[in-house]
Image (cartoon, rainbow, N blue to C red; front, side, top):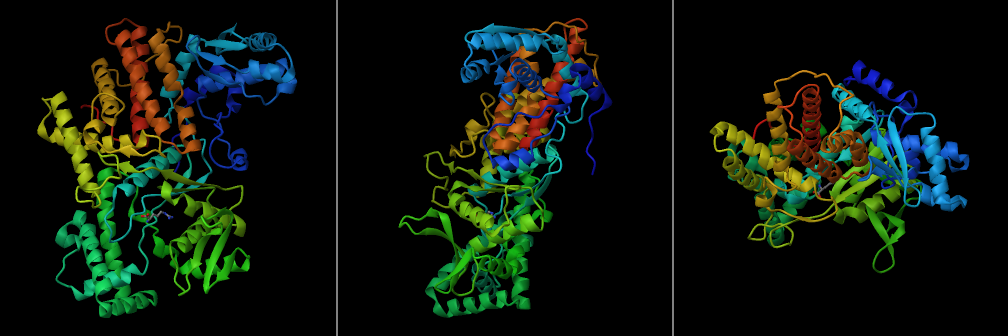
Length: 631
Ligand code: ARG
């Protein structure tokens, strides 16, 4: 389906603003992330409205080359600055490299930057040993606002267009309770799916359910022997199906260990399942389908994008395993070892100095987790033609994925044209600072955790806004509680552990989802009062108050932040950006009245509010968080 394109208005303003050079600007991308080769081939292409920081960076790059052609390709090192709008710190290191005085090189760059006149750069001053303080024109800042408001994509464009990205996330296990660990992969993976989707990538969401394995033989046998036990969604409700199955699974396990006759019947059942026995496969299918309903109930409540179409569980890859094994053996990557087939790493050794190992096929002919992941990577590259693969699982699986990626490279599935990342994350801790468990030491049910957050949110929202009618309070409490859980997760650096604290997550003050939702609702309320639903006229000659200028620069960086998230796979960069945006708006609103001022200031400020509200709402949407208009 075609996405909305930049409107003519945005395109015209962009041209007017920048001449031709601006159209060729590429996003500066940070150096972290996947392989360099890949980055060269897939460099993020032009945004439709180039951020002023990127524009200035390109202008400085050009000036450096005009001043000293041998410095072509140098990093202009442009950042926001307290002393001017931007600062370039390039001259000092570059001057050292070519043996001239930093001040002299700085003066040359200033000359080259200002001698042609520039629609954006208003003033450049040298300071310190070769720093450049750069101020841009007010007209350029207002024009950016107009261009972004005039574009359905907020001027971000679709820099990831043409890339196919497979994101493996959520991946709970059938017949087992979804636990707090699955919460993180679900939230982080979904955010990345949203960001890449918005940037124009063709995103394939892969929910790699644990739906296959010998444990199902045991469970099926136990269920057959205990028809009196209820576990179907229609009997116990979709949110309890998996808990019921989890209980049955534990009972089956205990029976298996205690009763050798049952163990034998269970083993026969495993063989029957693998041989495709109709009745056994039907029972298995029933267990999978019921579990999927339960997962679906959680996904609905969390508001994640995953649908039944995204389920491609372990069983999906089962038929491919013999061919995967043969290919690995034929290409000399896998070897026979004591009747099993294994891949021995050439890069990683275990504690006893022997090579780390992937089990491709066990001695008894069975396949396991390693085998299936060899199949996922092969399938996603050779059948789905992915340009980029993400596996969102906890950090403890780092070695597993390292070995899978190494094997895939050796066998030739994975090349430098394809980027692959294990998107690892830390543990959710309980109030005592150890991995989150129930008081009895069991797994915390996701639904219970969400209920706790919603209850906490309900209390703070009701206190803040006692007039809210009960039904509206229910809706907002749900949005705020779920949003709080997601935001707490997404705003922490992904590799770190964090503590689940429902009260702190739902606070109205501080870096919380509720604070951002409230900031959004507040701008909505200003705009309701302004009663200017359509586009307002922006006067680009109007002067800018410092807080107004600061806010507009934050708004202008949205595309760069999203490029950064795509590059580093770190959603907290977006979360923290939105927090900074909300605070910049607060400072603006404290010092720049909107509704009570005369034209053209009033219209300009309404436009500032409009872009703030759209960027906040949009950013929250990319985090998967609702943005209610009232709170
Ligand atoms: N089902 C696994 C678990 O619960 C996660 C699977 C992640 N994806 C993968 N391709 N291995 O830990």
